[in-house]
Length: 46
Image (cartoon, rainbow, N blue to C red; front, side, top):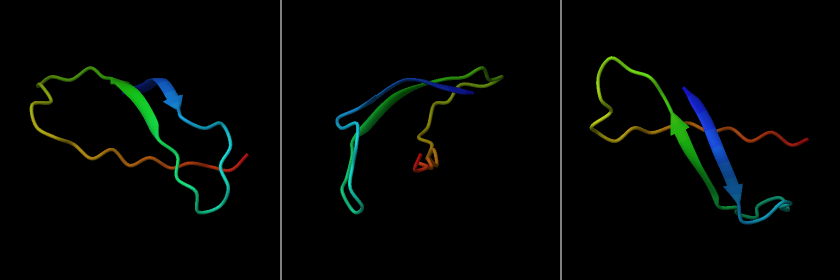
């Protein structure tokens, strides 16, 4: 599974500030993803 086409509404955020992130998920599976999934996302400070 790959995450691609990542877009954010801000390039920098302060502590406690929210940021909106949109992305596309590309995957190959033997069965269709026909029900909702929760994808855990972690963001590291660089």
